[in-house]
Length: 112
Image (tube, rainbow, N blue to C red; front, side):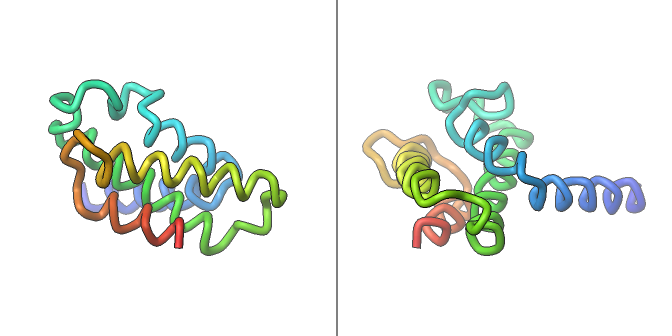
């Protein structure tokens, strides 16, 4: 089981560094995947949903810190706006569902 976990971790880290990481993180945080729901907070209490949200927020932070140069200035502004929306949705907005604190922290660092 430990070796399987290490393989999974390596695969997820590779995905984070890939150019598709931007869109995947945004889709999870926006609730456009079955992994986490932006409209059904009860669904997000499931362990898998919390892990997906943390992974997406970490991916956004990792991408901003290391791969921001991949985006045009216009896309950088759109990313900032999306990150602020995600931050509002998952941690700071009125009626925001309870999300792991790591989600809020990583999104805040991505915006900073």
